Length: 193
Image (cartoon, rainbow, N blue to C red; front, side):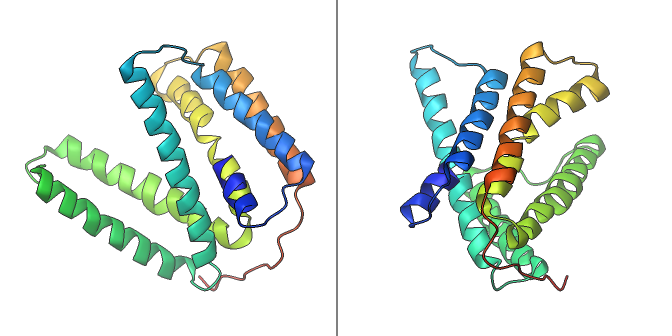
């Protein structure tokens, strides 16, 4: 929704079908996560952080799509991951977070997350930003929540509730509506990577 709003603020027209698809997918997310009506300070701070996090991800996606108009996937990911690694290093040093001294199991987990989620998963998203609209890429990212629940069921034996499957159906329906109703991208970028 944030990506669509940013696009609208930048003068893009959001077709009605695309808007309805986004709304349907967002309803799927609400079904999966539940609607927290708690009015505690912690709940409000958590909700605010979620909104800011979503907005930050949208700005990153839109900026990434813009950068991918002129940069290859390799150039973009090296720049992006390098800057993020340096900022994280500075934050860890400033915060006194230990960078060494972890056991073998912790290092195996760190390497696994780095290779799978970052180098494979995030790099695919960065590639897609050159060939798909940022709105469609953002919508595809909504599949992460139910996908994680299904993986938890398969790998950890933690069966998700029926709401996860209902939410997944809504997200898929919304994604289908957006894909079928979206206008074609104005230019297709061929990546030499």
